[in-house]
Amino acid sequence: MKSILYLFALLLFACESSNSSVEEVSIDATMMDQGTVVVMDQMLVDQMVEVDQAIPMNWTPPHIEDLVSLEDLNMDPNIVEYELTAKEVDLQIDQGRPFTLWTYNGLLPGPVIQAKVGDRVIIHFRNELSEPTTIHWHGLRISDQMDGNPRIQTPVQPGETFTYDFVVPDAGTFWYHPHVRTNEQIEKGLYGAFIVHNPEEIGLFAKERVIFLDDILLDQFENIAPEYSSFPERMRGRYGNRLLINGKLDTFKSATSAQQHSTERWRIVNPANARVMFMRIPDVEYSVIGTDGGRIEPYQQDILELGVGTRFDLSVKLPTSGDHILNIGIPFLDEQGNIQTDWLDAYTVDTQANDQTPSDVVLPAPPVIDHRMPTENFEIVLDAVEDPVTQVRFLVNGESHPQAPLFTYPKGTTVKIKIKNLIGPPHPFHMHGQFFEIVPNNNPETHLPGLKDTVLLPGLEEIEIIAYLDNPGRWMLHCHVLEHSELGMMSEFVVTDPNQPQP
Ligand code: C2O
Ligand code: CU
Image (cartoon, rainbow, N blue to C red; front, side, top):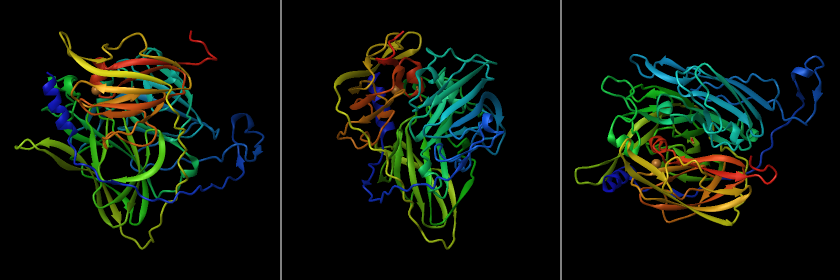
């Protein structure tokens, strides 16, 4: 069995070696003009009190190209309040007939949630699906009570509601999705972007985009194939047979517009069940300016590899007019057994000529990472065994979905975790509620800078991460190949708060 998996790993992991070089980008702190603000708080509405400086200016979230952003229902400039409903709808994702999908607010991807760093976010959620669900806010370091862990939050039953209420501590590109029968619920369309802005960066780019690089598995009748429809789906996770980019199938050829000489911010998310997404934008200059945990020092790399759940923020310069196309790479074995990559058109930007002069976007410096030295060591082993019922069962340190936490440390602990992959396919290893850094190693694919919440661990390899356990609570850790986590590769850990003893 392992040799089959190893072949999958090889096949899936094949990637042309990426050229990387470090770009010099001038970083300068630009301050926004903070004027006088009129607060329209409900209690103050009659008095129309003018408040100076104490409250940040009433902000307007940027327009996100192509996607619908939720409308903030709260007048307070430091609170955003939204309504979100999970429901089945028929949606046109192709030129042809509509598809029956599970969506947030009837949209695929779900509506973009926007907030600025430090905001209180209130989300009134209603479940109109025929089965229970929760929402997990992937990457947000919020309270564990609001994290969508179905062992903490009783899943929201059909017809019921739940109000998520939390404060967002970090700026960055995050996303939201269910955490109940996750393989099925995400595949059917339940996911959306959650952007937390640094207000100093709003308005610097000509346009902001969020691009979800997804795939979907359709059967011969062009319906979404039932879950676990093949043995390989259990082994390596569900690989789709069609690309689904921002909710449109690959055959839906449409282009979005841009201006020549403009610089845009593209936030790229991989919400697929299992597929590692290789992407490039030929003939366009772009640099990576952010990752899971927010902004980083910019660097350039031609081919980017996104494990499931991971994000890249790109600064994209559109120097020439015409079509610029984001490609997705699909590795395959040729007849000689060599790994090749097919590059498919995924997302087209039709760039209009004009006589603007090119100008550089000057970004504020990224937050400084406090690289703390680990004081603890832990080892995690990912493996699998055959199972009489599910055929295969995936393991974290020998157990599937154990009740007891894998480890418990007090808040503020820095722990070096070695993660070993003993079973073929790559595993995007994800920790809830915390950030970590990847320890530099000899593999340019896994050595990524910045704060992460998910790291792609190649088949039969090992990596080390340094986890900053700063957010107390009871948290999940799991492989983000959704079939792997559903079939057992999921565990929990606890971060204790000395001021709040465990119940
Ligand atoms: Cu996207 Cu448990 O995570
Ligand atoms: Cu996995």
